[in-house]
Image (tube, rainbow, N blue to C red; front, side, top):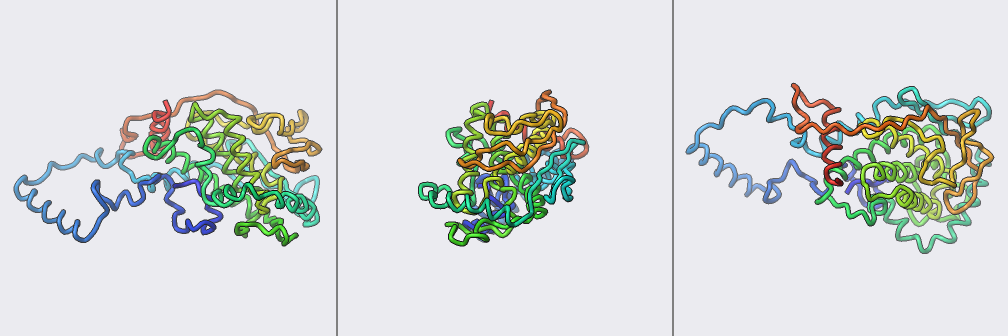
Length: 375
């Protein structure tokens, strides 16, 4: 099953599964027959049968070129490799010192609209935040099962109650799995630029019950992935009520604070980064023209700091209760012009009417098939 945190590969024994995004249960799809897995005995029997049939029936008609270009005939793993890169094309990521403080600013730009995360790099600031994490770690008991399982899989939690399965919603889960991997690609680049120590580096007694990742704490990868997927689910699945789905994402993010591997502000940054990346992917899929919400992530209304009308940035004096505790919000969101126009995904029958499958047509076919599953 996809939707594992690939930055933590190996934490739950899933090493080697990374890269199977979109297979949704069809692992080995190109090396299996309709009846069973391949074996030397089966191969020998198939060869004998094919030879006898060919000697009696003669040569097959010459295949047409179009028969080799159907999007649905591509293995899910091949579609994933193509579309994963396409979904992140056009996003630039750049780091620079803040103009107003000693903090580091990482700016992401897409279609001329920029969003940036600003994080303090002073260890004293993060040590103070780690004290709050230490207090949360004492109350992690009832969340331990979630903490353990969510190291490697979050989609079951986000989709709880929606009755999604590979058998009934294979193309939807394939598309969401590809989006997940694309989100991880960008979040990993952002994390590398900040390189913030983990809470346990300041207070060993936090003693996380899971392996503490070696990459940067800020922003939270789990929060980025959970909120990004929550937005995508809310747009794709009619039964995925936005605020309820966002609440699931927030709990996934909170669990990382209780586990002792993240600060509260990591979740705030991840929620905003997830919103930005989901907006890019909805635009790429032709579902919603790219725009950033003027009030941040709309489904946590009432808990997101209001943007300043003068600067379009989040008021740093606002408080954000992301992880059931108060923390000053120290990231800023640069907002582009709001545009709420929507378009429907292209749904070509075979995505192959031209001389070759285009990436846009391939994505259009997959999204169209996903929408058919939820209609």
